[in-house]
Amino acid sequence: MMSGKLKTLIAGPGPAPRGGTPSWRRWLAGAVGCALCTALAGCNTTGSKANLATGSIDSPVHAERHPITVHHGAVELKIEVLPGVHRLSASQRMKVSRFLSTYKSVGAGPLTMALPRGARNHAAASGVLQDVGRLLNAGGIPRSAIESVNYSAERQLRNPPLILKYSRYYAKASACGNWSGNLARDYKNKPYPNFACATQNNLAAMVANPRDLVAPRAMTGSDARRRMIVYGKYLKGEVTAADRSNDEKSTVSDVGSSK
Image 1: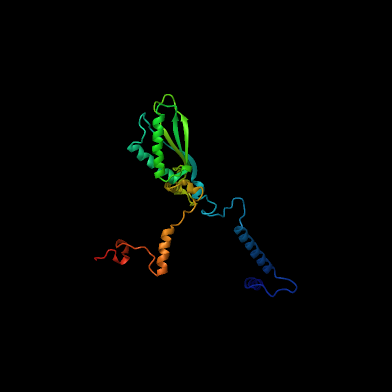
Image 2: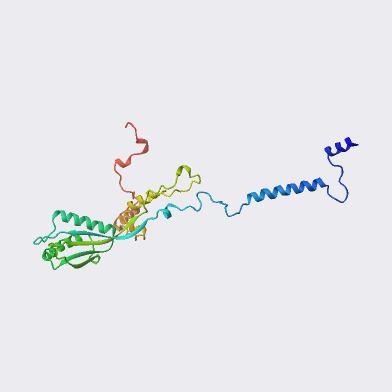
């Protein structure tokens, strides 16, 4: 009897009694349910310490970490005026021409010409100012962009200068050199503090006119003469492309050949 009962327990239960579910099936269903609940609870970690973001999400970009700021600044050129000298010297003329060329490219606002008042060289400064005016006309700077003022010369200055001044925009990024973190142990692979700082500073230095970072410039007018020439060739059925020299007609197959 003992061996029969033991064999029955090992082989499996007998037929289910009527009107109910076997106890071993109820136990198995409960165990499976507990296992599923535990697995789902482990996947759905929503505690305060959960961090589901990767290194590329919610990380400050280089433009926010090292922004380029644009500010105003004054540029001035002081022209020495000696009594009795009513014209610019050759070196002064070169400096003024370079100054006016820079004003045309990056200047913001009017060009101010300050004449010393009440000084011994006032008459000479007036003559030099007329010479500067001729350079303004040659450079194509309109009179509406020029502002002439007088300033009181200091008594200790024997020959106060003629001053040319204008405002311009300057672009500057943040300072570099923040290596506070240890990149060898940065396992999150996030941007380090000095990341893209040199790139931002180089961009700020290379911008031809920092004013373009504040607002776009208006488009210049098209060349009507060139447009009519191309259109006339188009009506005649001629080639509208510009002529190319022999140096520009090389092809990729000719590079490195013995011809």
